Image (cartoon, rainbow, N blue to C red; front, side, top):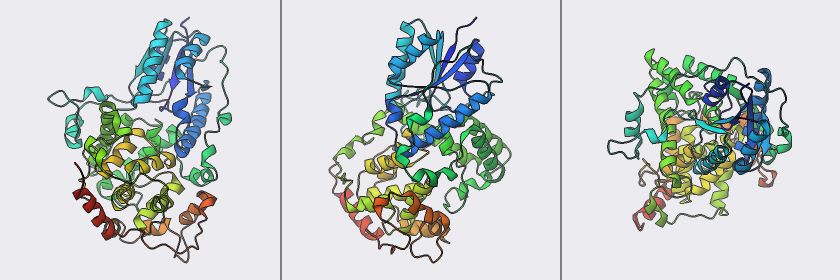
Length: 471
């Protein structure tokens, strides 16, 4: 009888298009899925850790429906995974690749330890469509600008998604498992969890339904509606992609079919999928993007790094007096996500109008977003700040007032998320006050604040600082 295969589950909470799981079934013998709570999981921010807990619970139920289980263990993967493989008499351990430097280092060590024990260790693609080391310029270097990157991969073949296994062979006896509830992955969310939960679309089936609905009714106008925050014009798949409840290849092939059908916005959707790939490409080749200025000369720029400043507090609370900024920040607190146009505006306002370091915003998003993704978060913030690859020019300072006039003319977005000053506030605007920490002492009856920094003043201050920079 073939020995068991241990499948190490990470950000791939699905059955379909799961190369590691499919290979484990094909190998023969029992298949034992395991999720490990290690230091990288413990280090997640409040919202992404809570969302991970929901995803794990749902995936465990899906596995049980297949006659399988999700085994939970805690500790350092370098010790726990080899020990579990020995405990099970496993002949192989399979997993899908991660690309951030901490995960790469961990996975390399685990693979070496398993091989020393004579256990097959193999990683598979799946979180990306294009492995970062396979995309090169004509000079054999990595791409630093998005448009040439897009042109180099747009006509590449992306393998067709793999169907879900019809069955997952189970062992005669299951190993012991820790209890998910004991991990308390949602503890830091406090009362915010009940507010955000209705906005979560959990699991593979929900992700596929989202993709189908988007392709059926929204992708045709995606190139226009994606910029209108009051309109439900995007795929909303970011939270599912972040945890691998759907694969990028599944999204790509759906987008390709839509483009063949003549749906105008489909190519823009494909470009957004490749923008995500570009973020991972850069993280792989220049991991400093996660922690330091990608453009190293920006290390000399004197941003404010003091998170205790009143301006930073106002930005975090959605009390800047700039309606586009405040609406977007509140949307994040209520839904766990933020419209892409809003992300650009709040990031530009923090780094340019308030002259605060992008790391402050990066850390806040890391704590508040259920669709947090290390590569996309880092590239987005550095793009907005001007310190990153393919960045918005330092002299381009978004005016959040004119941006609101352009993309939210009827103020549908603002009125949905801001309660102060409205006689009958939107229910979602009121939910913000149910989600925030009580210590903020904010109520819907507060007077809406005047701008802490006006668009004109902030722009002048930013441009003056850029002109006097030492690089």
